[in-house]
Length: 443
Image (cartoon, rainbow, N blue to C red; front, top):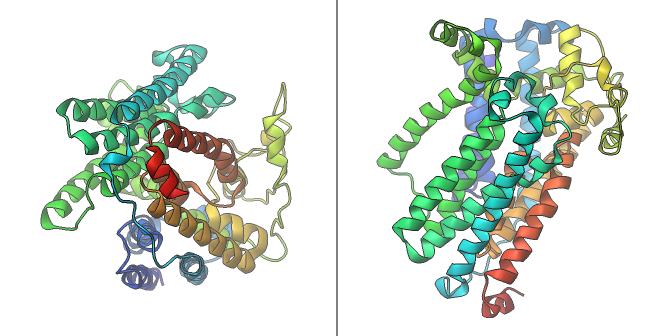
């Protein structure tokens, strides 16, 4: 059954890509088809080749065989994908009016001033965080405690401004094509990657890399699939794979071993890579665990909001990330459900994402409703990107939507704190950089 699932999704996502063949490479249907092909299909293929690698604890708590588990997952994930494509299609606008007079629309000087200002604000926020936690050395040697170290550090919410600054500098390179701007862009980009990595996470770094590529496509030159680009992409993917598994290694006790050369191969494995890049195993768990009798029906959905205002000991309030309940169920082999206090559940999360959230709360209707709505949001974001791609902040917002937007409590909390900041950048760019003539044309 796992092999059938692999072949089916390979065909399904390919069909979705062909369905949008006339669209831009980063249009929502193509974007999500590529994303699912890389993240979902690769995991299913690995499981098909090495069925013993799949977490037996998931099969045990769900009381199913591997084939039964993937059969139900395949059915539900197919429904989810089709509803996502339907949501995108229903809200798609056929024609987008291009903006003319590209180079005359911007103040080159003001772009650079704004980019440096935003980068400086984000960098200052990072240094303030470092000062509070005891310095860079302490942070790097205690990455296994990164969640606790970053808890309550709201100053880190300003760090995305560094990513916005990098995208603005891509526009500066487009306008003047100066070597100095290219060098400064490289410095900004690698600096941002280094700081994001030092926080011990991977997803924010990977999202920034994708954001950078998408910005190059829309601002500098549309990307085309040639033999040269495929070769470069393949090499880049290999390096990225090492990065994805290297970061968890740095967070593990093995990183502090005196014999790192011996410990590294035991931690850096293909299996670990699969479980680090894909959430398929979490979706398989959700698809097979929840029933009419134990679904959440939005119990405790708003309770995590108490964490924003709680003072003192927060052990008795629910986690913002409800993925801790998923992990607790599998780890302890018994039922956990929100809004249990955080001191009674695991401190490790299995992100629920849209699939887990929708099915855990409303079962099949949840899959249909929330994937259709997610598709609608993707489509609207893409329309705004096309219509106003003269404002590069829309690239940032669009990529964040594709990778971060879903209806789980954690991701909604992320957007509640991130979108206002991005919208402020959008407004400041319009007022400070765009010409009055273009502003009139846009409105």
